[in-house]
Image (tube, rainbow, N blue to C red; front, side):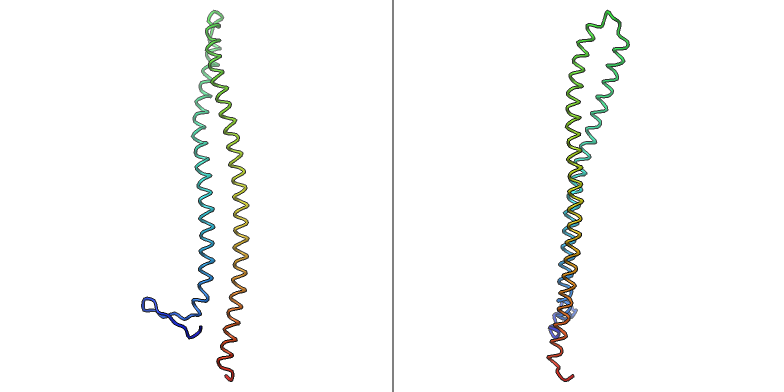
Length: 159
């Protein structure tokens, strides 16, 4: 393996370089894949958060409508009260529907929180796996070096 050489683009490489850099490059590629997967999950969470932010504008609109209803009630006289009660009933129905939407948003926020915790656990497991792979690569590298030393000793027993 130490005499094995190959040429790429006018450069000559020894076989030992292949034995050293191939495991290293595969570990780096695995790390890049793990980071890419994590980034995709973060991007998905970002989309959910942005959609929830868009719904906050709807909530603000409902709050403004509620303030208008309260102001209208304060300005009403007793004679107009019966007509306003019907309008108030319609507004209360709209408020109840908005409250149901808010409860749905609350559940979505809980889901996002759970997803974030799951992603944190996933990142920790990837980090642990990368550390394990690095330790195994180090062991393999030591074994490869020892094999090369043994082959060199066999090839030149007297010198």
